[in-house]
Length: 255
Ligand code: NAI
Image (cartoon, rainbow, N blue to C red):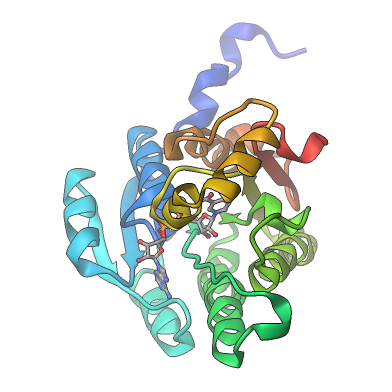
């Protein structure tokens, strides 16, 4: 048995000093709080987001760097990964939602949602994963959703739910492929969280009422309540965890 004095302190396992973390969709909402959490744990942070107006200020606040990126553009993702070959932690967080009844979903809505939420995650995993594999180390955490495990109601969002279920299974697939080469791949599955993404839903009384009633903890999450789960999976504290989706949903999926 290793004596306690020779073991790393358990809280030190959560530190990310000297590591470079890149967060897509980190300009606001959940992504910004994840970026803030990783920076507080010692990482150098790059926020990669479509929106420079918000993203540049967000990166400045964390003494980090902003990169304008559309995750749906595979060439742009490849270019960024070539320019930043030292990313140790990739957080695939950029995501969008469109609400439409399945039978009336326009092709463009379906494509837009799948293209950001699934294609974008895969392009980033492929490109940043390649450099992690070359260095023999890395941790990837994707923001999936409880919508990948249940189908939400009353709002219709089949494309979103399908995209998040795919992210959960992509996570398992990549974890299996890359485990023996030092790269762990995990996901978090948040429940309803108060961000610009859910603002419209909160303003719709029927949606709001159902969301609160069906969440055992009786409220929405604050974005900062998702960040510790991401930090855990990104850090050495989770050195034996891969292919996992950590649910942070106030209990929504227990009923
Ligand atoms: P948000 O709308 O507040 O922030 C999303 C960020 O992603 C924005 O900064 C936006 O500019 C960026 N983005 C959008 N499309 C992009 C693209 N093509 N390329 C690069 N960046 C892009 O959303 P929120 O709520 O913070 O969501 C973050 C993630 O969490 C998403 O993947 C979302 O699906 C997921 N999620 C959100 C939940 C919620 O209740 N808010 C619940 C479960 C999951």
